[in-house]
Image 1: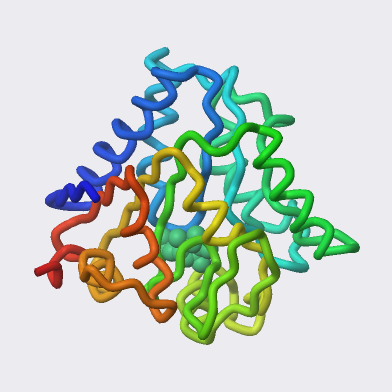
Image 2: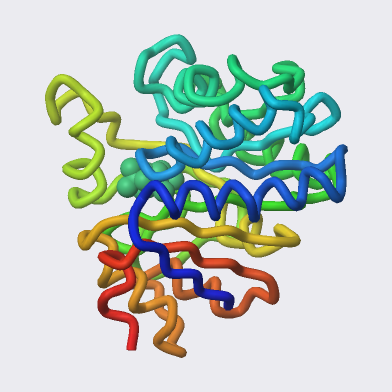
Length: 242
Ligand code: GLP
């Protein structure tokens, strides 16, 4: 794993965008694995700027997102589809019909999961997967527990994640309790992974990434088994790494 420690969030966003951009420049038809949450917003702004000044061209790219809340309409302000449109897709030259986010309103959610995994296969796999990380070590919505799932699946969010994500909603009661998420298998099959984390709240989870141990208590520790992971963290998130 390659570790890059930055002074602050601004520098983190710039460096992560550079790492991500390299893949798009090398392969204009790249399949981009995208993430939501507070962490990628700065990086997405950098990518938008690069697209505006013609450094980057997304017109031949496809994107596939990690997860979506169950029960939220795509137009809902806090749906991950809406997040992606607002923070990235509406501002770059990607073909929106080639951007995929799991459908949290699907009548048959099990089937939606299967179709999502098939879609990733059909696209030939993910060229670069961007990841944030939860305070509890979750990646996408793969929450800590006794076991982890390989494929896309339905997950019940942990109290810790519900509390963390309540900041985006008017009240904690409005946070959906369930989500659809790509599994660890889907993430690990990505050719390259870029994980970003900022702030002290992530320090414990990030420490696990460099512990040499893999545990379902910190799902992100699994990434230690991947060949090409770049971890970009600010000093606060890096502070417990030995
Ligand atoms: C959310 C998302 C994750 C994200 C994580 C951290 O629940 N499902 O994909 O990485 O939590 O979010 P943030 O970047 O806002 O701290």
